[in-house]
Length: 134
Length: 477
Image 1 (tube, rainbow over the protein chains, first blue to last red):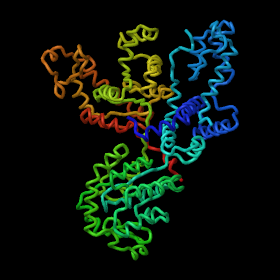
Image 2 (cartoon, chains in turn orange, yellow; image 1 turned 45 degrees about the vertical axis):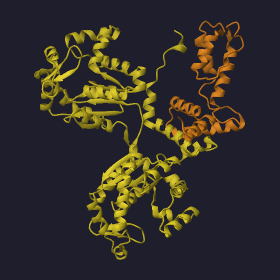
Image 3 (cartoon, each protein chain N blue to C red; image 1 turned 45 degrees about the horizontal axis):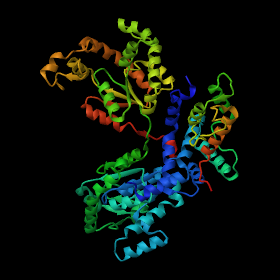
Image 4 (tube, one colour; image 1 turned 120 degrees about the vertical axis):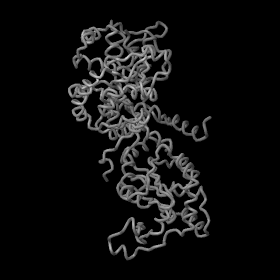
């Protein structure tokens, strides 16, 4: 039985996406391993704040070349497309939560490089928008 | 294999980094202060949180009247640069709430609980307390107040409970002198002020009358159990019946240690028979960490027949020492597995000498807690020469301290060839030659007296697992 206070707290955490924010910040800390973690976190949070206001690029671990690399691993023979199962698994591995289940080319089970990158980018953008949507 | 479904490995650098900068604690305190304060703009709030100084002291000093709370709190607040808050100082504030509370005290009535909570909360959220931390003296007096404070988010990081017998307290009350200008407390015999100017103005009897003293003492004795249980996780009890400088010193040492949750990576050293494997087993059972016994590991790798196993098999057969780099490879491989990196490990039987210790330190698998179990040679011999193992269950028995429960078991007990007096002596001599060098590699190691019974040793180990003495520089103003 959750008490009123507990419920309020968990609502708060959910509404402001605190857990996702913490996940992102922690992964970024571990990836870059900065000498001054506090300063680094302040910078990330400031960038997030700016992007919240202007909708500009959000702090994100992956960039376009990383996604190319992921696609390259899945498509070693350079066929320019992957299966839907591969697409889904790859997005899960990237940490994307709500995955578009009907991307372009799902009917033929052929997901093209461009579709994969677009979906992944959108998903990552969503993941890093760790603030309340106004 | 599809790269994306490959089992996840956590790079060992991550946990080393997390330990070094206290990342888990930082994240934890960020989330907990968010939940307590629930700001509308969490991002801006977190930026402010990170800009403040790290580890702000939040201390409560509790105890019966005349036990020395004032002296200790004063010392702590000066040393840590925190704000010293007493009941009197709260009531003297120029705020509306304090005004209300003063009306109650003028009429000699109890200040209502809700009002007290509000006053304390308001005072502690002011800029000086918020930024530099606080030392609450004699507050809360009751468990109810403690719980109410907890609800509004006043949560101490350390609670110092001073204790002394009633006789001592009465003695102290009689000789108590108060400096009316600074509020400092002196005592005719225990704390004597040398400065003549101050001596002149010292006033006696500003404190409580004997009746009030007894009433307060009574109240404290009723509440002490409740208070202790409310703060049991952060509580330190100090016997106050000793010189005040010693008491303050102990309190200071306590508030400078911080509890940190981290993945335990424990190294146990000790002469043969000091109980390394037993303690490792106890630790692994209680904390679900992985026990890594170097000897067992080597034998199991050899039995697996892997590439490395084949390489070490001949050494094991001949009873020759295995080359350091092979042992280290096997150890590293084991510690890198997910169970070790997620749950932590406790290792013994490696490293044995300076060379191995330095090699281990150069890898990313560094221990974060090192213990030396200490035992005299005679005790080691005594323990091992009468030790026997049950080949069926693997349980160990001792002819004197832990005899086998039945004749059936006693008859099948076997003594390890390593436990003969000769080999124990050889192993002991070996251990003693390397101890000094090993200790120099791990200067932060903790020494534990292993002569006590196993559970006392275990308690001693446990108590040192999660406390980390803070480097002094964090507290420098």
